[in-house]
Length: 155
Image 1 (spheres, rainbow, N blue to C red):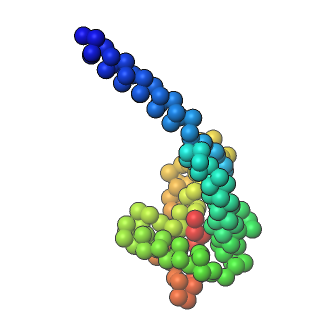
Image 2: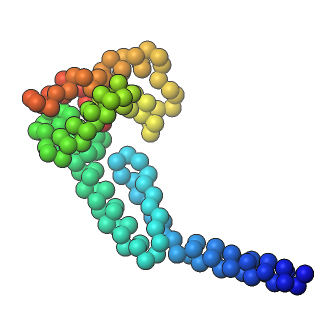
């Protein structure tokens, strides 16, 4: 009986030690980028990499944010910017995913995102509003060569 009790105590001590030390080794930081809350958790020894990841997110936001008026994507959607290589790569992949999913993924979803506007809208849109917004979507209208958004906005 003493042997079993000793084993249980040792297991309990080991479990307590590891659960306490693992928790204290983690670092979590949050930021808001690309219109969402982003949380990164890593161990303390790699915590300096979080700043690098947030810097990279900031750079991506300058290119791919649809809601920041000065971003390349916002300017492209408004016709003030030419298609850049980085956006073309992502757009090409997005259009392929749209094709493969028969539109279940649609890179032109911007009018619906705007309609739902979870930051400001207090009630869900009506079926009529949704139908009108859906009429403004359609990945099939986008062409990469020659480049044309076909009157659509990408998100």
